[in-house]
Image (tube, rainbow, N blue to C red; front, side):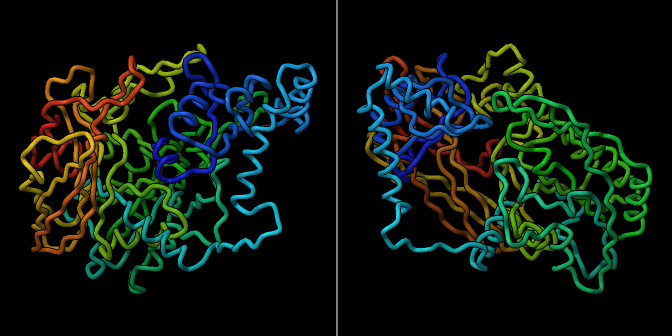
Length: 519
């Protein structure tokens, strides 16, 4: 992805991270910034540091860093400010070496027309076209995890009341996330979305259910900066719990909006566990007891321990931090105006210890990061080690059903490294509603001479198929995408042999396979 950002997207800038690679900080890692980024990939833009991620003056500059950002020191005390001037005067680095970086910065300023003297076309923000894009993205991303007893889509003709429960029903997240906050003209919450979409004849009974409460804990981040860090208080308020149960009990359908938010799940904070905060598990359990027609909607960007909720609930939806139009998009999915077609971009483990990479295991506080997963990042670990997930990578249901069949390649002969493999497959909508399915193509090689994952995603395609219709979809996989990195040669290498291309709608639901040869 980083290489493609250079060679395909022509990125203007890269940011150096906080961590070390092979014992050197990435903002002063000449191998990564000079040898790989510039010499091998041909990058000509600037490298900027993450905030307070610089540790030296001369070494950082010589290693490829162009701009230093940081807090809380005065700008003149930055490593690339007065200390760099002192280093030039002391002969530790030449002015001509500094000029290289100055020219890069000036070149970028000229490219984006930020130096004045040229007409610069103004952009636009918060337009209706932008909000339409936000809606389209949000509605495509909603993931249906479970749907029993036909709870979804909600049949509005058969109900009079809907209970809406949870702090997340009214929580706005765009401005959260610390450095990732975005100011938007409007943000439609889940409750507002339901009010916008439900018929006026249906009454909404809202109850907050749980409080977003934190116990402050001082913790140093970004060098010497100390910030109040959030530690959730996971006890329910008895009165709020009672109000939530009453709302659910006195409604035809209940919807709980649970999960996290952009204050809890944020930059500069690693979760220590997968537990739902603020006492939400107890709240969900109590509401399900009084109203089995309860839909649980999770809002969040990363997995939680949902094992007990999956077992007890009949309908489970994952809705992310879906932006300014997220509430309208989610309401349209819940009401069946749109058929859900989102897929999980990560594996949801049954328990934390099933995953090799988490804060407690990977960096327990000894200043050493353990990359125990090696090459088996994400779903590759679960699939290769045969660890059963709660929900697999690529998983997502629909209100209709699909048959994926007849996988075939575009030729029977072996492929060479400069070719593209074209795989065709038939997708039949066997249900009663138009819908979109995401075809996922995973590859595996038989008898590889190097360590490899059991399978790797190499292509995907979302296709709209009307009910009763069959569509043929063709997806291309460049042979070069099958390469592995040869550490000894320091180069990507395509291994000759027989590969199986598996086509399905998740990493654990393969419907058809195609064998191809690489010469």
